[in-house]
Length: 259
Picture 1 (cartoon, rainbow, N blue to C red):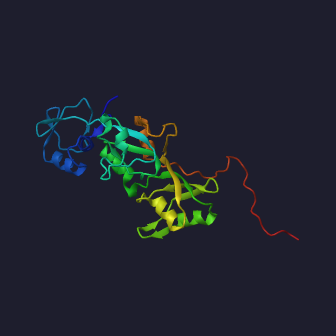
Picture 2 (tube, one colour):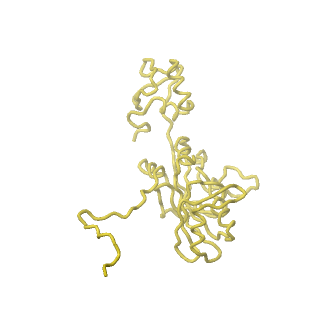
Picture 3 (tube, rainbow, N blue to C red):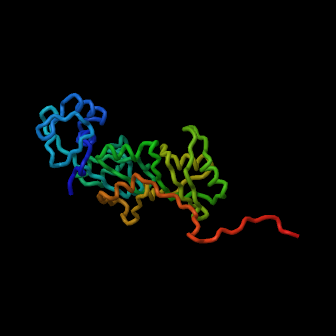
């Protein structure tokens, strides 16, 4: 499997190789610093493959190999490479070959579920930036039963000392359990919202990122993501809409009964 997709734009190829931002790479290209197969190239949109010989200021540039894993974080681990309180971190259970990966977002010590780690900066930015509105879905258990009013308040928004927080959607699954979808991703958002309403979270598990779900990884374990799984992280599920079967007759509108 090639490390560079067929026909990658030159500026993206250089940026993904660690030369700099795409804008900085555009400038390098337009100023004549880039040579492809012995010929100067001034067009950032030029397509290159791994078969092309690319140089920047005389130095051979090759595509960086990206590694992305999904880790099922158990409770009790900190999402940090180093902890000042010397608590166990997610990196304490990952092998040395994966210590260079960065976690995308975080789950607090008492939370669990899927966590993405990668050395692909562009992927991490797309997953973490609020403007992308990538959904994260959580299964949350609280310490007491609640009414439907709680669900409405979570979606409408709650004012907290950290600002207004809201869920994209909330669904009850039992008397004390709900499924919450977020796109904001503020620090400890679910716990802060529920605490503001007088509830305490007893269990919080992240089930989904974008359209990606994996329920087979055991807590504390990880696996490499396949290439075709990456787009699932970046794409939210299509919202289901009730549709009428083709050819089905639409019922006549209701009106006042004739006397």
